[in-house]
Image 1 (cartoon, helix red, strand yellow):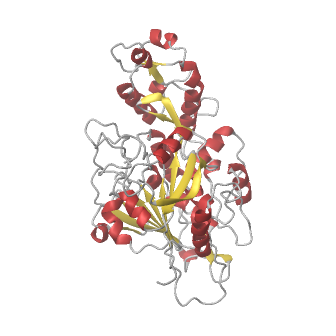
Image 2 (cartoon, helix red, strand yellow):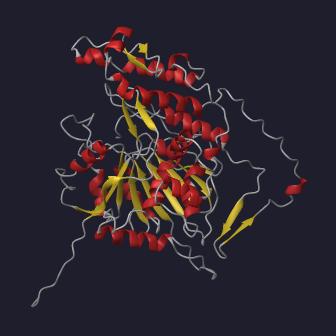
Image 3 (cartoon, helix red, strand yellow):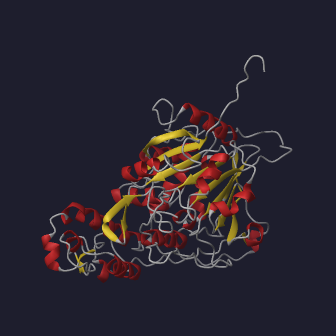
Length: 485
């Protein structure tokens, strides 16, 4: 169970990327040779006999760069009109709440930011606090229109494999984009779009890479964490071998728990992991009740609790080649797509506790867990006296299982308050409190999203995805022998 948050912009981002950046079959794609550490180009046999497909016509541009601001209810983009209706149906007027009046829905749109913010114009004029967040709402308004404007998104063009001898820096977004070979981010809006798209895979890479900015010198990594990272990096950074390997190297298994928006990203975005670690192969497991599955899967819509606000389940992703249904193997709605020879993604719509037995035994050298903004410290909608970290239907049975594996568990939060709330929630949970060592100390994530996300149930609530990050693992207890025994 993940903390409630807006997902409309994530739907638009995923749909736009799948439409704009789907790889064309007519393009000669580079392949990395593990034996020689070189990039080679391959063409299908007798491909010259095939007729060239007609060139794709560019999508028409709906909005120009100087025409991005529109009140949501009057937007030329139908999805943003629907979002305005969603906000009006969910969000109560803040002035009515503060003055203890009967709560009315937000039917009046602020002319400055274009969002529904109050029940009437009179209450909008009366609210002196609105100017505090009005500028951010206008920024989000223009960002959402720009994302759907139809322009070519140069900031979404991804570089290919990183050569083994080329170093990449994970100091911050600017240095990463430069050393990784991304196109120049000329505007703040481009930075926001690119950081939101890449925050999930690059947060993973920035933690695991040998050039990580998380070190013991800046006190973000503990001595116990250094042991965990040393084991993982030994498997990730093996140099290209000139000898023929008799046995294939085991893939790195990354478990993305409570996955939602992460599972809707186009697979080539996650392929950046393979490019950053050219000597390793990855198998990503997206696990959660609201995981997005391909349209041809046998999955049913994700269940929601009655009377509790839940962000809408994202639409099924478009079917990819080399996709197979895995429900027979795991016993839950699931599918696997082979993105490349070094990246496979399996999505399972279930709680991790339901499928944990399928993945044992776990190896600290090749396994790691990630939970992006899981909402451990939020009240449970299914067990009101408990927090989500202790609720039996949510994270309660999951955390003890993760700690038993002795593999690192990395967690992000969307604000300083959220990070603190999640960390404090660890203190009084049976099977968790006193049973873990710190791997990464709580603090800011240099690869968090720079784009504000607005909650549909209250536009005043704005967060940044993956603002902070921390990590733990199950406590290791060493047995010491005494003399005479």
